[in-house]
Length: 292
Image (cartoon, rainbow, N blue to C red; front, side):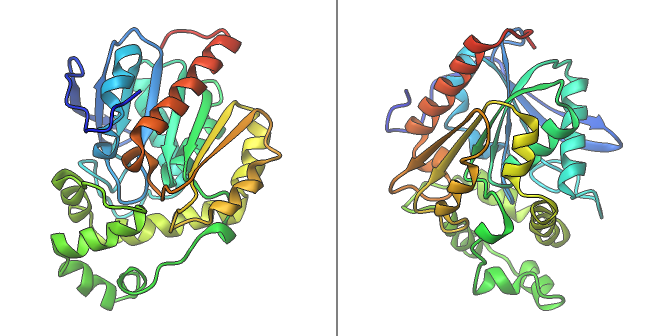
């Protein structure tokens, strides 16, 4: 289990590179043994590979850990289109194939959980389990932002506000992702600042479109994969009470974290790591799989 201080121990050789897949350059970071069971970590909206920094050192001891920057995020390309959840899932699937992965457990935070689900829908042969961290199950679960968060999507006004963004305004916007004071790294802030207005405003619209087409529990019922749902009770972006919608999903485990907000991976890395590793170990023991 992680201790209470940030993890600073070495995590072995880190393979940080850009992969060209499906005509796009995608930023990929790998840690751990290339021969170990594979975990894929997918960040949420306006996130990046940096959001997983507290968990990767311990996960990399036993697993091959792959992180990606979704299209429009972090160091990946920021094109004019391609932000639909299905397109993001397809792109991530291409990354896995390029890396020679044939079996993977996927962990997604918030919107990353939608991409993880879409990946499983498209490549059921690759995905052997899903862990969703504060991923809202339906459109009705979303808590709409107010203030600058709402204005940034307004044409013209939103573009002007985005052009004037500062580290201070970004940190203020990120505060809704937490229920407490969190040491948000300068890398996380820089990755948000590096997004363009199109990717920043289009990504959440595509997430809502994906959920409007079909709720996440309905999709998961059809997949019939082992699923872990982790959710902070104090989430300020999605109603934590909405986790009851996951109840009918086969092979699901729902873990509610009191006093925790939208980002358990940064607010409670110890507990998050414990839940993830327990889920992965149980999944590994219950079904044979290839190493990849």
